[in-house]
Length: 281
Image 1 (cartoon, one colour):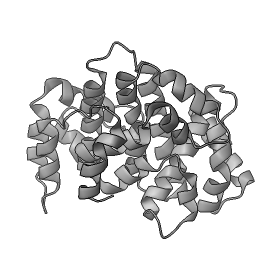
Image 2 (cartoon, rainbow, N blue to C red):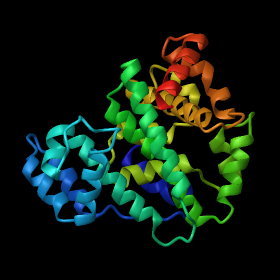
Image 3 (cartoon, rainbow, N blue to C red):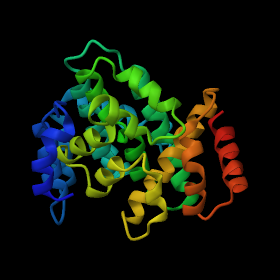
Image 4 (cartoon, one colour):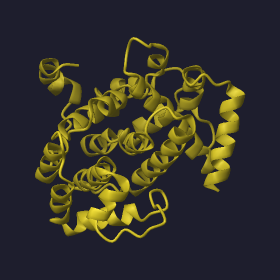
């Protein structure tokens, strides 16, 4: 979708959903990271200006999901150990969670906990399948549903609509949202990703993450975007299994396409799921 088309379609596609503006610190970080030779010290300086933000980065950098066994005591150390792109993803995650939480009385802790779990599992799957960088898979897992909090703000009935879409085994998840709300969380998430300077690959994966037909179209999306979509739905399925969830209509819709994309039999995928679940436990 080009910029001109986006500008024309934005009002109708968002159906009145407000996309929060990108914070100034994120714009500055993005500009620095897009330089031919980004300056780690400048990136650290920008992050360190915000005490809560720098504390969040160090907290995540020292968490089991990212820890290298050496305690991180500063933003500069976090960058040196994890790399600037991983730290940038942490910054985006914190700022986005703050932005999406403002102006609503609806508690979204369960949503963010689920997103974080999906992110961790997606990164582990990426390491095992060697299809994309684990940090990219983590970022996608964390943000692929980022349009949902904005829908919750805009439409009081969002949770009921999402529950209906979750139970539907015949229609695409986003088609149910479109019919009930006039838009869907994938479209909203796409425009949010574009405004917040996500990479083009992440934005297109967010837009199409409930369309599993793209996994069988090598001339459609990029290989990375398609891999992220496959990893995302598999990671969500594993997360539901770990939580003792029941039926999973999304995995039923996606399983055949995911297996074909990764060139794995359903039995091999079941073995992979069991192995990941054992590690999670």
